[in-house]
Length: 149
Image (cartoon, rainbow, N blue to C red; front, top):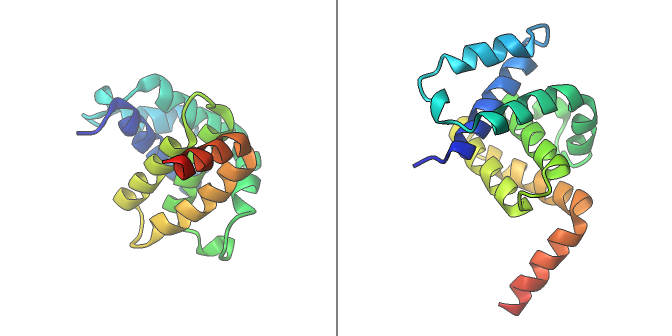
C-alpha cells in the first residue's frame, strides 16, 4: 500500500515531468490537472505542493547540482529520470528532517514505476553522490552505523 507521502512524490514527479515537456504551462494548471486524478486525495498535499513549486522555483540550481553527477550526456537522461532527480535533489537540499536514505529509496522506487528498465540505477548513482555532497555528515554517520552492525 502506498503512503500519502509516496503518492505526493509520485504526483510531484508527474507534475515536474509535465512542466519539463511544456515549460510555458503554469504550475497552477499542472496542479489542477493532477488534482483530477481520483487518487490525488490520498496524497500528502503539503508535500506535493512543496516539491512541485519548490522544484519549479529552483530548477536552475537543482539542475546544476544533479548535472555534476551525470555519467552520460544530458540529452540521454530521460525526462522521467530528470523529474525524479529534481524531486530528490530538492528534498536532499531543503528537507533535512527526511533521512537521505528515505529520499533515495523513494526516488529509486518511483523511477522503477515510471522510468525505463535501468533508470533506477542511474538515479541511485547520481543521488548517492549528491547526498555525500549536501549531507556529508549524515552519510558518514550512516556508514559508521553500518560498520558497527
